[in-house]
Image (cartoon, rainbow, N blue to C red; front, side, top):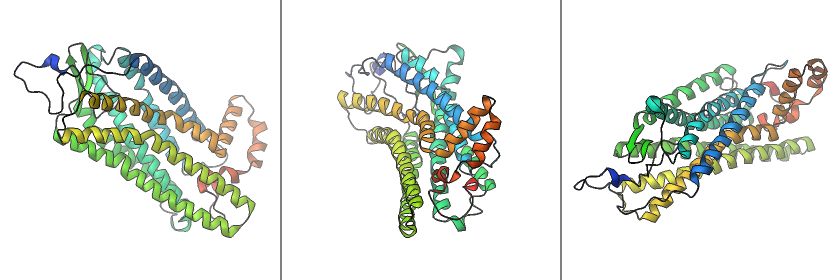
Length: 375
């Protein structure tokens, strides 16, 4: 059985390592000699199906988001839409790599793509790494932008200018491209008894330490910022709406809290299991723990399932926008009507539609201040 290839870039287990050992060669520090292969039953069937499902829904969904948010109307777009478009673009590029991993999973982890196999291995792993960084960084930027729009509205005119937000997006992309380089360097196609596999050389203590640092940068630190931002927003809304005491503000408050709750839950549910398993695995290697076969299988299969769960986040975001953002649905309707040649009949609707309800996902229900287009 070949070393199983995971479409993530920081760990793998090789249960057939003994096939490549000589009689006098030492075993890896946490490898049990007699561990049989114990991959999930039917993984060569359900994994390709899941990857293709994420690919199709993620591709169409994020392309839809980019088309809707990027469409130019009579009104200027919201500032936060810049983050939304970049986040959708990162997810769109990422899902394009999933057919490769679906083919590999259908072949029990074999990475058989001929002479360009090694290039595809490195490139797809690098794209996944860049997506992981950019995705979380953009979510963090969106959270901080919401904090500025709600809590520090009058003091954040420069930070929330279109030029500053575009510069922030460029900085996020550049940082993500640089931070993804280790994935390119450490991932390659290696030959095993049952064929080639796209795996990483994680025998280096430096790389293991880098993996822990990555977990800090891509989950613990961003989640802390997101929780602080949204916690402050909720406190501000509670205080503001209580003093306002009008049904309109109360309705915006309920919608805002629902949106906040959805963003936090989806983000944490998608990424928490993956990061927990990754930290456990890396720590077990750094401490040279003597793992049993059951423990190795539990880590291996747990990482596999949690990795799939994390990737689902790339196709869930468009659904969140569509079902919870009135402004997004309105622009989607306008785009759809334009495509059907009904622009004239929509102009009256566009001019009379209330942007107040739509702005709840952007301004989180503040009264007064700047126009919704700039939120």
